[in-house]
Image (cartoon, rainbow, N blue to C red; front, side):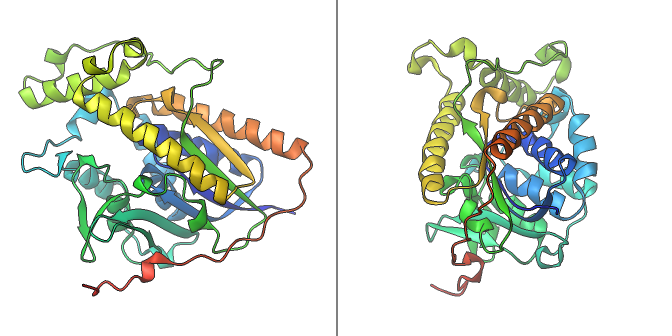
Length: 321
């Protein structure tokens, strides 16, 4: 009999391409994904899969080169975040059609955070793209997204691996993916096989040169590991701080809502904008999921925890002052 799965996809930038590998692994092993909850990149990947459009997204993202990633980053000069995020969403809208969450063939919940009310918000209805846009708004990196009278930011701020949001539906097992796990000493960081492209060949525009410097610093984290914190760039320090915070919060949340299987993707699997490494990260996600499934099945687990009753934050009174 096919086992049904509640799939929980965590936040973590380009490392979220590992979510695609996890999904493919579950499919290949004969599991049926019945419900999905995601925060940030987890909401994007989970939403596209729930809408039956992950294949198109995967083909697109796996064809991206570093210069393509740069073109999707539109600097904001009005505050609220380093990047506006408009170009990215325009590219996704041209690739994948918008949909209504409650009409998706797979139950889906996007997790975001309302800054004004300081609350975790679960989107289970309405526009798929609006929910995703709010969920991926990494604080200080992307501008907050205004939707339903709320200023929304990355769901990972309060719930990086939102297991609780996937417990509304009874399934045989819960599989959660944490993208901010500690580095494994047996798994070296991913490196791109593509040749380095000098900055001046990517673009003559100062904006692109600035973005390139930002991304280069993120990608060279291991080389800077033993340097003093004062030598980190502001963005690199911000990125590391967010990852540290999210990993701590994730394990606190996971101790209260324990999944049957936790796939731990190490933080050095890829940087925040390393989408040009999508193929390698997808493969890593597949391998880590397969290892976790084999370990779980070897334990001969036959009992599955009953899902706890949860409050659906999508029902929040939006007219509340």
